[in-house]
Length: 332
Image (cartoon, rainbow, N blue to C red; front, side):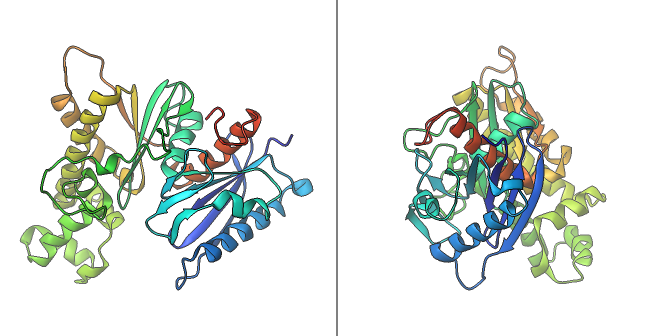
């Protein structure tokens, strides 16, 4: 059997893929944009197949052990069906079945945060950790739990939605329909919302940031805030520290429930590094249940960046094939 596997990461506007060897190294890459006017299942499926075909053309013999798909959404426990994807028109979409007749390799579908967590466990910041929790801070908050070499998907496959823990009853409205979800306070969206509120109020604290934006507050993004903070803008430093403190509060709650040894923090917001993580560590230490009488989990930055999802998807699929688990229930 080939040691190579393909990983696919499905985003809102693109499908990225890579061929990986069994050390987690990407040996070939491919990417295609998804048409802006259509997020229909058929259009996205065609784009996935096109990326896979591009990658197979680079592989001697055109054969790989497996194909793993990382999707931002809820995935059934058998790793076959996308139950719900908020940024795509997928509702109970039998993605593995639809791809099986078009791809000459076993296909497995998984949540993108599960894939990223597995990648960090196998090849990144969480190697040799028996109880790892991955938190991805992007538009929202995703998560994964890897214990004793297995991704914990829950009874129905939808575990890890830590961003929808309620941390402020009656707080900000969340896209999920509830109020006060953690991701409304510790995500990229929260960072941009708080910065924009200062801009719209014409706060003197935001004048340097507004100048950086050329007076166009609508162009504000999370990476711009991070860049400004890294350049010494004290308001942006404070905004990121606020996100970090909310991150630490959520991690303390998760530690009380799951007791991981390491929290790996990934996603776009994690690019702020210690500007984010040091306030998180301080809040975590202050709010942890039983503090002073229990070991403290490490809080570390992810290592694999934006490619963690496709790396993990490929390795999870290859691991399932090696375990002889056509229903997705094998190791990983």
